[in-house]
Image 1 (cartoon, rainbow, N blue to C red):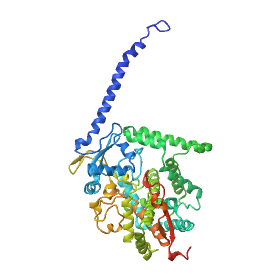
Image 2: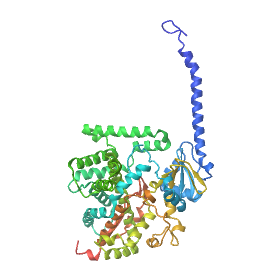
Image 3: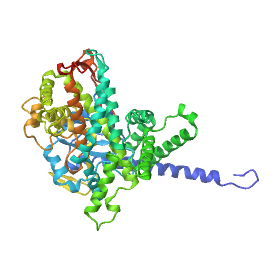
Length: 532
């Protein structure tokens, strides 16, 4: 074929020649891709495990996301159908779901060295440095440094700060018209945030109202729906082999948005920066200011720094880096505490208010116990019925069931099942918490705090996880919850209203919580009539 300059051109011939070759290559890659998917989808058949049939590419993700209640309830439905150990797929990632407490005890405790890692979250960076993401020796090092910051003495130091924030909540409740129904959820969220800011950074919300409002808004946004983030999260779940691409895209788009809004204030009207990026940026500033000016306060940040010093003095021959958190680790762990502690505690208090309003006899029992030791911190932490009441509420309404998971670090045998390295394990917490064999003879669907007076299986109650990787902030959360209940119930009786039950519904975000808030009425107790 002649070209414009009269010479022969072989390009069209080459193009025509290459087209069928390219088509064959594309088809071959597609066949290999489909074949590999089908091989993965046969994983559980080879292991002898039942489970729901996966859809090509999506696995069982559609069923999980489209469940009428939430994805944790979907796992519970599958457990009823396939038994206490089965397999399902997120995209083409196989996950073994377990609700047998004996098997879980072997995984979480007996053979912990085989399962010391958690399953990576969607869009989780490979180099993320905090307790939730750390693995192996890295996790062990961080845990040994951070764990002392939640010891009894440190918690006692923070008690006055927590009580101050709860007293501010009581002042706001005093402004509510008695016996008029209202949604208490926003006040509980605000109180939880105030406690976190005070106890984590020593920030007084009353003196830093603008900063506090910004932190509150951004922390709330972390758990709200974001089209951009959710789309990338789904891509990360469906194509985890390209996780680096999704993480990089998410990271640099958000950095650019933050830079744009910082340098061109007008853009704040049109672009809302990613809450995670904003929070990390401002948390880092707080840490740098603390280190730069040598400020010391009674808060979590200071306790974490103090804990590293204590551990170092205990082993003077060891290197400094082994017993100190670097800036990234300190930043990420403080951020993790802020995000995790804010929403989970507020949601727990939401559920407690709902249970109190709908179970008046149990509330009276709890008030009688609390009245005997009011203002006595040592006795408050030892109250039996109070502890049972909180445990029973979290049994009925587990808040973050998907956080309790594991990843196999080396091949091992669990019962009759051989688990390969890299296999992900999920826990069906709802099936365990509602198991009649574990929680009978009183129906597990009934609110009955006294069931915790009896000794139960150590793996029967899992809201805070279990084993060496349980929630490091559990004692702090329980202290906060117990102080809040003690002070609220000393002054008020929680009553139900027209919307308490009718408006109650659950929604799943990062945690499972009330969708429409918690509507209650307050009745001032006789011993507090003169106070108001």
